[in-house]
Amino acid sequence: MNSEKYEQGLKIRTQVLGEAYVNRSIENADDFTRPLQEMVTEYCWGHVWGREGLSLKERSMINLAMISALNRPHELKLHMRGALRNGLSREQIREILLQVGIYCGVPAAVDSFRLAREAFAEADAEASS
Image 1 (cartoon, helix red, strand yellow):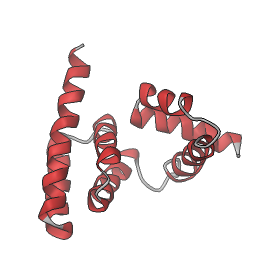
Image 2: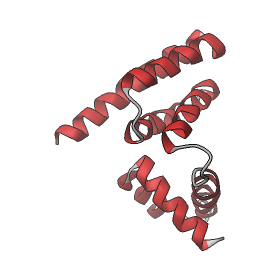
Image 3: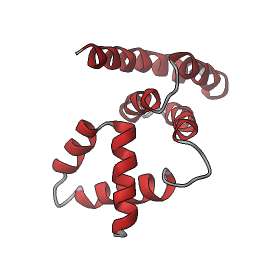
């Protein structure tokens, strides 16, 4: 493991997904899942999210579309919250999901809109506490 990229990835992952989620993911890792957590943190977040070619906001936009298309609800809801942290507005998220509906199908958009409402409600509850 490249500790410099791991540390960079940990910083970005925490910034986007939130400290509580990242800490929980790493603390709950066991001998079986720890290599996955290390790989995701170093390669996904350090090597790819840490590149200069796109902003975190742009990466979030791409992720929302791809994860919606792949029908990965847990990851989608998590990245909805990350997209808000990265500066996307709810209106921008809505437009991304409408685009998903056209190119990936209405069922993908319906599920994604439902998850967005849940993520927005959680973000609102967190902001008011």
